[in-house]
Structures are given as structure tokens and as C-alpha cells.
Image 1 (tube, rainbow, N blue to C red):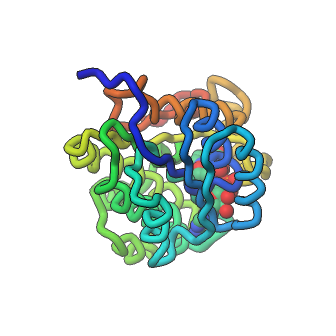
Image 2: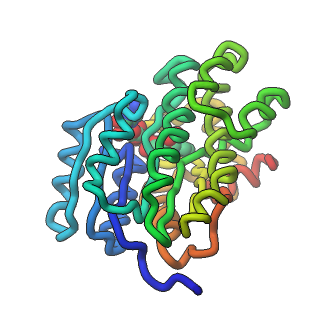
Length: 269
Ligand SMILES: NC(=O)c1ccc[n+]([C@@H]2O[C@H](COP(=O)([O-])OP(=O)(O)OC[C@H]3O[C@@H](n4cnc5c(N)ncnc54)[C@H](O)[C@@H]3O)[C@@H](O)[C@H]2O)c1
């Protein structure tokens, strides 16, 4: 039967203090989600972001913590107070210049895996998960490494590849390939629970991560794109809110590129 209504339960957003995560929290409130758990490492900024949403009438709760901490996912599930997970966005992540390769794989890949495993058994019927990948996951890379990251990895496994991966930019590309592969490989298991899982691959979005616009990579992406500008976070959040809504009830196990045609312009598959 075609799903008509929103799934019943709580919505979770990680990386919610700023950037894409904060925009998703706002979009979910605007879309009528009434019970939302916001998570981030930066507890102070998270409270400020939550404060702006309190007047909406939605029930907003917060959880400060590091998504890579051993106990974080248990704390997150505990904060859901026994409610099923109706919508979940994993937006916590870092840019290559912020961490070394092992840290990159741990935050941008391992935490996506842990997040997916944590919410899977608790998904509401009709619920959906959005993992944030990146359109850099379509950039060409070493075939051998591609084979590694495009198969489902197990928890802790990616760290073993840090040395082979090289620098943290390469780590970023591979971590995001891993995220895309994760949404695909988990789709059937989520389907068995009546739930969906997708990844979204943003292009250049106006956040802290993209303030340094003079780099060759960013200039190339803008110059060759179909839409030659950086996007507002609200443009990405609108696509994510759609994917979490019943309007996207037949969309699962795939990746949505929201990149203004950067990948198309650069000729990547
Ligand atoms: N901005 C872009 O152009 C762009 C493009 C493609 C993909 N992405 C991806 O989108 C996601 C969000 O990026 P953004 O641009 O909003 O960045 P951002 O830096 O503005 O926000 C990231 C948020 O994640 C939080 N965070 C970082 N590490 C954490 C950890 N270990 N535990 C808990 N929270 C943590 C930060 O405190 C911050 O609030 C990232 O995964 C990023 O790779 C961004």
C-alpha cells in the first residue's frame, strides 16, 4: 500500500549545530516533524541552534557528544526515550584539512556505519535514513581502493587502510564512497522493517567547510558546473526533507546528487 502519512516516532539529526545539519533541523521543523533529537560535538553551538527552533512548537531535545565515541550511539538511542526512529539524518562530518587520514575514515565513514547499525533495529514503519556522502565520491580514484570501499566494510576495518589511502583528501573521497555503498547495501535490511535508507551527495554548499573558495578543486568544480555557484544549505535541506517524507516512499538504496551539475560538468560517472 502506498504510504500516505509521515512515519510515527522521533527524528534524529547529527552534526546539527551548524551547516547542513542545522539546515536539516530547520527544514524538518518546517515540514511538520514535531519531535526532533539534535546531536553535535559542539554542545554550546548546538544549544544556540536548538534555541532558534523552540518557538516552532516542536519538541526539540539535544545531545552533545562525539559520534566516534564508543558509547555515543547507545546514548543517542537512549535519548530517543523508547520512541521508534521515524527520520534520521547523519550530517556530522569533517573536511580533509581538519583531520589526518585515520581520523577522516573514523569520523566520515565509521560513524556512518555505527549510526546506521544503531537506528536500524529501531526504525518506525515508513521511516527513513539519509546519510550525507559527497559528490567528491564520484571523483576518479585508485581502482583497488575503490573495490575496498565500495564493498560493505565492517566496523573498525577502514582504519587498517589509512596508510594505503594516503592523505586525508583521498580519505575523504573513499569515506564518502563507503557511505554511498552503505546506503545501497543496507537497503534490503531496512526494507524488511518497512523503512528506507538513502545517501545524498552534495556539491559545494555554503558552510564552514567551503569558506576557502580559492583552492584549485573548488574553482574547478564551480567553473565546470551546470550551475556556477555554491548552494545555500536550505537547497540541500529541502531535498533531504523530501527524502524523509512519504513523498519519497519508493526511493531507497540509492544516492541523490544535489550538486548543481558539478559532477556532470566535470564528466565524472
Ligand atoms: N559543505 C559542503 O560543501 C559539503 C559537500 C559535500 C558533503 N558535505 C558533508 O556534509 C556533512 C556536513 O558538513 P557541513 O558542510 O555542514 O560542515 P560543518 O562543519 O558546517 O558542520 C559539521 C558539523 O558536524 C559536527 N561534527 C564534526 N565532527 C563531529 C563528531 N566527531 N561528532 C559529532 N559532531 C561532529 C561539527 O561540530 C559541525 O557542527 C559532512 O559529512 C560533509 O562531509 C559537505
